[in-house]
Length: 313
Image (cartoon, rainbow, N blue to C red; front, side):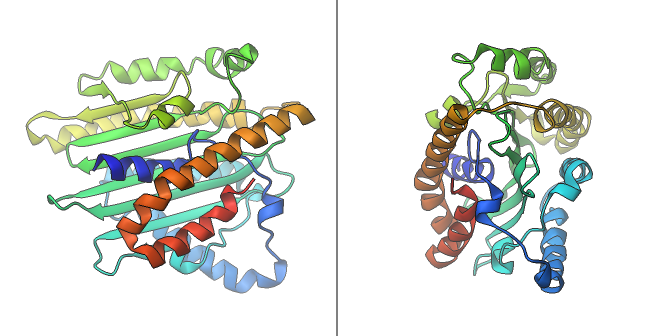
């Protein structure tokens, strides 16, 4: 299960969880295709926002996070144009399903693209693994951190939360970067608040790569309730994970996505190289090995080829 969690997590947020490329070089939608693409967008979005395998508090959190993105940047985002069998795919046995929703930004938007997804997989031991994710990536006109949210649930009483603004520049080499995005915004207070909940414990990924690209204020926690107390878990999601996740997203929207940053050619070249290395590593190590096991080689290849368009620098 640890391998599956690590692989799916890397796919959904592409650690550092960081992506950087110009959507104009990857994907342009023509106005003449509006009728078919609109229908495809509506159907795919509906399936994505359904979140059929998670609890009500979990679903409400995801829908609210997506709404916050779309309310702020709706006019700056293009529709999702992934093929229907990539937007939603179910394995032949029905044991695994994935729903993907990717909206690239317009050429004049600071948003490169927003990626939302959920993965459901039946476990051999019974029960299921459910991962919901929402990530947003800025383009090279802005060197601010990206946004990553994932909630990984392997049982009704155990979840892992990954919530981070992964840096796209080295905070050691650029100390003002650390101060601007992590110290002045008081990001660490949200991690500290969550760790005061008795059921919350630190989570350490088995992947050193993931731990390397995370920010110093990353929230990576494991939450487990005692004696099969599902009601307590839903209370934690509603009263703690929900408000903290929205507060961190608010910081990203106000201080990162909308930041007026001057990025010179040298810094753009650095960002392009760094983000390219991270993306290539993600596909090579994680997606290429985990998706064939989940969905079979043919379907996995189709999904990966579609996603690679967005990973290309």
